[in-house]
Image (cartoon, rainbow, N blue to C red; front, side):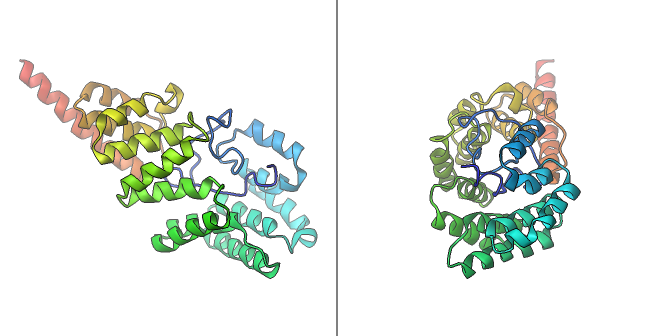
Length: 280
């Protein structure tokens, strides 16, 4: 499985940000064999030692973009006919937030695979994430589905599709995909949060809160999880707990999560103030 690892990118609130880190087992991390976006620096360094062919993109995942790109340039002649190589180049540019270049190299990966009369799922998935950033939703949906069509067992395109379904209110479809993923990793906090959020949007607050309660405490402060959990608690009229969950959430650069959290906090504070007034 080493050849697959870190070839995929996935959505995490807004996909360029690394929200979850260092999940320790396959039961905690449904994407453990496909992506390094949830790995700590120490685990990435260990992987570099174990698999030198991935050292360039691994350095990029570890924040050393310049070193990673230099290593990839040095191996160009050896790997120019390998779709894996161009996918890794694209991911280094993606991690550097150079999305136009990332898209170009993901397309090159797909074309290189076609020239060898093969299909290459990771580049289709990663291109889908780029399209999603550009708000080309139908193209993103098509690329995630194409990746799954090539290989149904890949988890990352399914994970991305589940989040895309949530974004467009197809909550039952999202729940179905998250439930499928949970068979492989029942303790994955991202999957548990996805199931819980699906139930919130479907109006089943009892099940939503049950799944939120299964998420380990260290992940409850994750900004996206905290915001969705607080929303479920707010709808269940547990305003005090909703307030504490939001107050303890980690800061985030993701604008939509930050704004949603601020608006929700105002609503919660208004309800708490209303309760105080009623008790006087």
